[in-house]
Amino acid sequence: MSISASGDRFAAFRHSSYTRFFFARFLSAFSIQIISVSVGWQMYDETRNPLYLGLIGLFQFLPSLLLILVTGAVADRYNRRAIVAVCMVVGALCASALLALTIANSFTPWLVFSILIVFGIERAFMGPAVQSLGPNLVPEQDLPNAVAWNSSSWQTAAILGPVVGGLLYGVGPVTAYVVAFAFQVLAGLLVFMIPKPAQRTAARNVGWSQMLAGFRFIFSEKVVLGAISLDLFAVLLGGAVALMPIYARDILELGPWGLGMLRAAPGVGAIIVAVYLAFHPIRHQAGSVLFIGVGLFGIGTLIFGISVTPWLSISALMLMGASDMLSVYVRETLIALWTPDEVRGRVNAVNMVFVGASNELGEFRAGTMASIFGAVPAVVIGGIGTLAVAVIWSLGFPKLRRIDSLEAPTR
Image: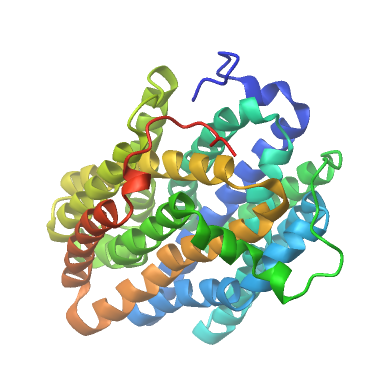
C-alpha cells in the first residue's frame, strides 16, 4: 500500500474506526460481486437476451442520475455513518428479495429489474456517504494510505467475489443469494459499531445553490473535472463486464465457474499492481501514470474482445484490472485531497454518478451494441473508443497530465 507521511504502510489501521469501515466496505463489495455474477448468469440463462444484460446495469445506474442533487446533499448534511449502515441493511433486503424470487421459481426479468432499481437507490445514497466517510476516519497525513487500502479492499472483493459467486451459483442460486445477504448484514453491523466521526456539515437550509455546490466545485477545479470525466468516458466505452456471460457460455464455452474466473481476472491484475505500489509508491509523474493506465485499459479491452482462447482472455482482463488500478489509485487520491470536506459528499455524489455511468451505463451500452452488432464488435469498438479518450483527455486537461506528486494542493 501507499506509505503514509509517517512511513507506515498500515497507518490507516491504527485508527479502530477505519478498521471497522474497511472490513464493512469489503464485505459489502463482496456481496455486490456475488449478486452481480448470480443475477447476470441467471438472467442470461433464463432469457438468452444480451439486451437484458445491459438493462441490469441501466436500472442500477438511473437512480444515481435522478437523485444526484439529493444524495450528495444528504451525505454532507447528515450523519454519513448512519446513512451507510442503513443502506447496507437495504442492500441485504434486496438480496433477500432475489432469494425469495429464486425459491419461488419466479425469476422474471421485470421483477428482477424492480429489485435492482431499489438496489440502485440504495447504492445512490451509499456511494457519496461511504466515499466521504473514509476521509473522516483518518487524519489527512494518513489519507493516501487509506485510499490505497480502500482500493485494494474493493479489488480483493473483485477477485474473490466473482469466483466465490460462480462457485456458489454452481451449487445453486439460493446458496449464492444467502451468502450475499449474510455479508450485507455483517457489513451493516460493523458500520453501526463505528463511533460517530467529526464532519463539517453543510448548512441546514439546503437550497438549489447548496445542492449545486458539488457541480460548481468540479467545473471550477480542472484537475477534479478531468479525473472524473476521464473515468466516465474511458470505462463507458471500454466496459465489457455485462457481456462476460456471453463470452463464458458461447465464445469461450465455460460454465458458471468460468464466468467467475473471467469476472475475477481484472481484480487479480489490480492486486498485483497494488502489491507493486506497496513497495514502489507513485512519487512522481502521477498525471502521466493516470493516462498510461487508461490507455493500457483500452488495449486490454481490444485483446479481450477478439480472443477466443480462455488463457488469453483472462490475461487481457488481468491487464485491464492492472491498468485500472493505476488510474483508480491516482484519481481517487486526487479527488480526496483536492476536495474540501464541507462539499465532499456532493462532489462524491457527482463522482459516483460518473462512476455509475462508466460501469452500469457502460454495461447498457455494451449490451445494446451486442444485441445489434454482436458481442465481439461491441467490445472491440469500446476498446478503440477508450484509447481515443486517453489521447483526447491528455491534450484537453494539461494540468492533470502534468501533476507530479500525490499531495494536497496549497490553498
